[in-house]
Length: 193
Ligand SMILES: [Zn+2]
Image (tube, rainbow, N blue to C red; front, top):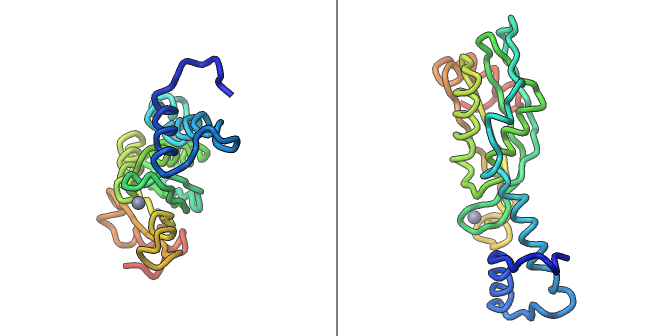
């Protein structure tokens, strides 16, 4: 508990929210909730405060390797900016190096950098692709996200459990059908396009 911490506007806002939905923020189970929500939100939006340069520092290596690099099934959790409710699923990222590769463990952290913000899936897909294209300057980048949106599933707006798939293809992934097909085969979506 942050009993001695200065009052937080965010915690005050959560208290207000609890009152407005008809709850009693002072009852036992809810007394610590504003603090917990604040800490949770800080964690889930850490992408606003992560330095992308620090993230990649020392992570790119010059190598004589020009075959496709694919990292698939990267777990991702984000917050839909329209409802502040989670969407989650998997990211698949591929690129064709032009003399430089990035440590494989960095790719999930690039996904997190953009997932840990308020997002819409289409923009996040593009942001991940643009980021790798700019920083790594590969011949091409492909990003596919497959997710479930709880704002859709829980509110019953559409069919619950429906998967939303978005993709961003840059460079040779866009211009060369063979490269794109190779990537889609790697990630098990060979039937597309
Ligand atoms: Zn939503």
